[in-house]
Amino acid sequence: MAQTAVNERVAALIDDLRKVPVFSDLSQDQLAWFVEKGEEIRLGPGDVFARPGEPAVWLVVILEGEIRIQREDDPDAPFFSASAGQITGYLPYSRLTHIRGTGRAVVATRILRLHKDNFAEMLQRIPQIGHRLVAIMADRIRETARIETQRDKLAALGKLSAGLAHELNNPAAAAQRAAASLREALETVRDASIRLARHALSAEQRESIIQLEGRASLFVAPMPADPLAQSDREEQIGSWLERQQVANAWKIAPVLADRGVEISKLEALAADVGAGALSDALVRIASILTISRLISEIENSTRRISDLVHAIKEYSYMDRAAMQEVDLHQGIENTLIILGHRLKGGIKVLREYGQGIPKICAFGGELNQVWTNLFDNAIEAMRGQGEVRVRTAIELDRVLVEIRDNGPGIPPEVQPHIFEPFFTTKGVGEGTGLGLDTVCRIVRNHHGEIRVVSQPGDTRFQVYLPITQPKASPEQPKAWSK
Image (cartoon, rainbow, N blue to C red):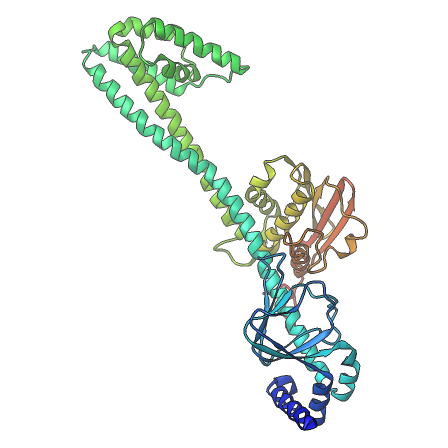
């Protein structure tokens, strides 16, 4: 009776395996061997079947249900899921050594797993399964690379957008504050003008007020030698205003001092308009000067916003053909503008641009991605404090762009691996290891070359790009075409 039950179980598992595309055309004997060597596992919803750090030794065939593997130490990391009919886990020729995440059943699940010690016999008994499992592994690698690349791009986009938002917020807030102050200043001018009208001033007296307004609006005082000098000037004007019993002297004095209005001019105005109208005249003049200053602030702020929008448009090469003549210096400068928020903390940028650097035919947006990654790595290596040098030069038929930092350097044992995909020296959740891999692929896509030379205090990434892209033969598409 027991043997009958075993035979029925084996037969049922063989039927289940036939529903899996990889096993569907295998012989009865081949499937029976796989079932005999395999181990059937039943899982309830949420049951754990794999933990981080465990050796990767099992090939897993999902017969029913669904599983999910996720890194719990990095909640933002993408998860891997597989459902009935799929094969996962350790596969022949895989380099996977340890489980990287926690494996759980999403719903009630049944799996059949095979230990890697049986792989050699499996490939001998079922030779056709080898290339099928390799194909699954290749698809898995491509999908993992795609997900990680997408995650890396989103992370880079997040950094850029956060930086751009920070850079835009300052001038936008300044313009908003100036606009609010402008409204208040306009109301003050209106009230002062109404009061002046009640004084029944003569044409000559009105002309004296207008002339002082005009001269003060056009003239900006030279920057004082130190804050004390400016404070002394304000104090002198404030004292004179108080002696003349001018209302709100403390508000008017700094405005007049900033514009270089001298006390002699104020005394002349007092003599012309009289003591009764002096206070209202000076309130009006100070308000006109304040309005002029606020308008300048709004102009400067909106110009800064416009410059940032122009820089991001140039950086991304919006509304332009993908392959075109690119000004390398302009691309580098636009990149530095976009990364400006990260440079303000203590990064000094020195430019050593070569003379006569020609435009090169390239994908401008991709090259800017190269500069972004290299600058970003340099900033992180120096922990926000240090010096970055950008040098360009012509070397034979190529243009050299060198980005150099004085950070701690790259250890010799790490240097051979820095351009490998998924290799990173950052902590868990801090990097995907695809930044320099992306840089390398973009440079090679332009028929260029990238080198790194590093020692403590001097790390240089050298990008060589051909001035003229090689032409492809009619039979072979261009290597750099999208």
